[in-house]
Figure 1 (cartoon, rainbow, N blue to C red):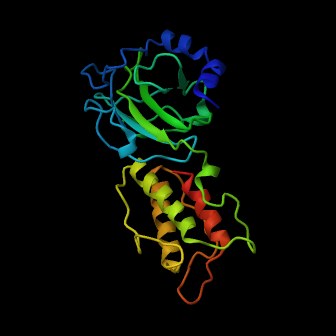
Figure 2: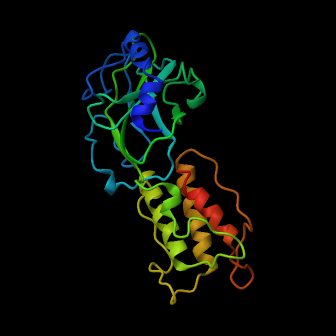
Figure 3: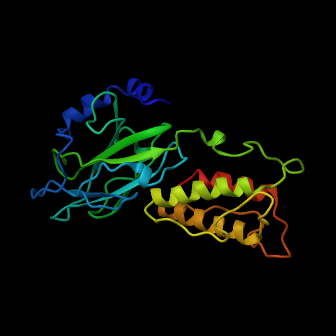
Length: 271
C-alpha cells in the first residue's frame, strides 16, 4: 500500500490528534522540563537520544526488506506516572506535511504494546499497513496526562527499493531443480548485513568474505553463521528467533539443502 493510499484510508486521524493537542512543530524535541513530557528513544540505528541530530541518510544505516518493520521506543516521566497512550506518525518527508499517516494506540490497539505501561517501559509498534519501498520518516508522541507530549524528533529509515521477491537471485527455488550457488549466499549476506545496520548492530563479519561462483565451496559454516546473525537482528527487533530445519548443521554430516536457503530468505525479511 502506498503512503498516499494509506493517508486516504485513515484521513480522519489528523482530527483525532488535534483534539488531543499532540500535534506540534516537527522540529520540536520531546525533551522538556514539564512533568507531562518525556524523553523518547528509537530502537533502530543509529541509537542516538532525542535532542541530538537525526536526519542522516539511511544509506549509511542499512535497510530492511520488511514492509512493516517493528519499531520500539521508551518514554520516561520525571514523576514516574503511567503512560496511557502513544501515537506513531509516518511520512515520506521530514516536515511531515501531506502525505502523512498517524496511528494511535486507541484506534489500533493490536499494533501497539498494551497500555497503560510503566514509565521507562519499552513500547512496541508494528504498522497494520505495508510501507515501501522507499525512505520514510517516523516520529512518536506519548500521553501520560492531558495533553501529552510534543512530537519527538524524527528517525528516517529505508525499506529496500526492490520488492523482496526481486531482491533474490532465482526468486523461486525448489528442491530437486535448484542448484545452490554462491550468488544465493551473497544475496542473503547483503540482506542480513543491512538488517544488522538497520537494527544498530554494526557490520557483521563473514567466513570467506568473498564468495565466487566456481571457486568457493559452500560450507555448513556459511549457513550456520547466516542463521546466527539473522537471529541476532530478529532479536534486536523484539521478535522471536526463527525455527530451522536441521537445527545443527555439521561439516561432513549435513547436506546443505534448498529448504535451508528458503528459511533464511524468509527470516531475512523479518528484522
